[in-house]
Image 1 (cartoon, rainbow, N blue to C red):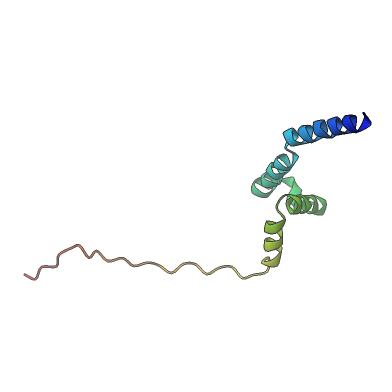
Image 2 (image 1 turned 90 degrees about the vertical axis):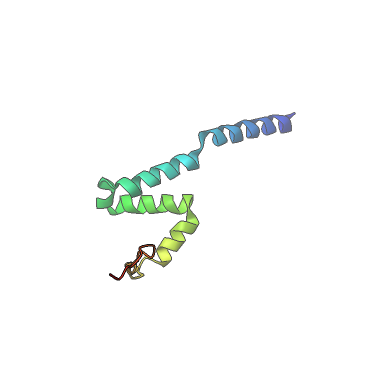
Length: 92
């Protein structure tokens, strides 16, 4: 009987945690911090907290950003020159 009670409590706890969608909420919070900025950028503690939350939510993206943080910026794209080849040249 105690095994059945433990199984029922585990099932209810898992269902409740799944419905809470904690990782989705944390990801939304991190996205708001990265896109909107705010006062968190002025404190080291806020930056560290946001970076730690980003590492929990998106570990691969955090590692990629950390590896490429000192890369030089990409050069601007070369301009494209297009000619109008449909125009007929007439010699008069």
